[in-house]
Length: 386
Image 1 (cartoon, rainbow, N blue to C red):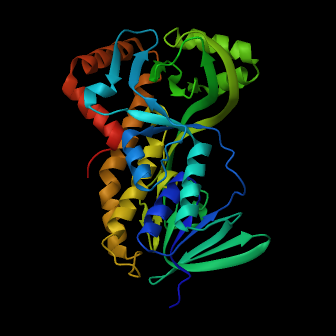
Image 2 (image 1 turned 90 degrees about the horizontal axis):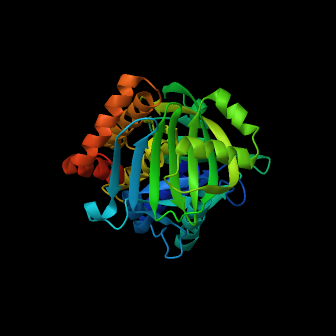
Image 3 (image 1 turned 135 degrees about the horizontal axis):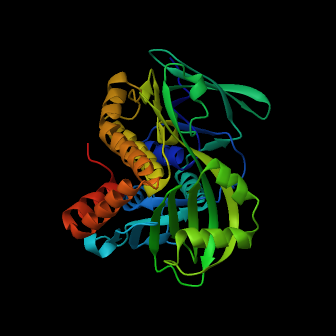
């Protein structure tokens, strides 16, 4: 059978591009299909773990001028209760616990590396249908008003889940949290000193991440509160946020790039099917607490490409045995990430007195136990080992 490519990657975001670059470097023929056109407009602040920088550096997608901000310290507290925990990079012999970077800047860095390496990304390609047989996969897509198709040995779905309706063999589980994430960029009268703050409140967690000279904000509230806060002007928004967060990071003085989205947990029971594999948010979309979702997805891409090194160039990279090995290899890390974030949301998004005391004891114990801090920090930086 004649193949247009070894691999078709559906989705040209950071996860799809990272996998495509790794597979392309192995000498495989890779086609990347991205629905959007033009420059990435997403201004979200991504929280990248230390291990994610290693993956991106190995791909050549971490240039010296990349506008990433190191996270040197993580400061964890709860509103209305005692207990806190502070993690320092120096304590774990790493230059930084993680980094923040805009989604847009990361996509540009990955696209620049794709251009340098000769990997072609086809934008404006909206996937219409995905079909597979025991021997091949086929993707039909629309571009410039014309229907096109391509055949490959493997189809990698990395489009955040938009194509999942084309895959009836994949079952998706969803859990609504009944929460809305308010995202923004805020300025403070005090330098951030590369400190990331995680503060738990009765309505949900708040993350305040150093980003350039500002902070990237993720504020979790109920849908009713989100609707009310949406109507506030910038000064009123900052006033309410200051009252909720406190003065740990100084006095907030400027707000921009406001938007919001509902929070849910979504994951695939199986991430592989015939000639098909899901990675990134197509495989699992997590609550943003602790910033685990993007890093899980990047480890998906890295692990899948790593297992393919055993397949010679021109070999069958969509072999069922390989895909089963991949699914097994990601099971522990993915499950740990899902359980950890879900437990944080359920355990910390309430004002029950007994739970508040228990949270305080847990945070204080974490601060007093170096072994526990090392184990937690390593899992957050590099994931759970197989």
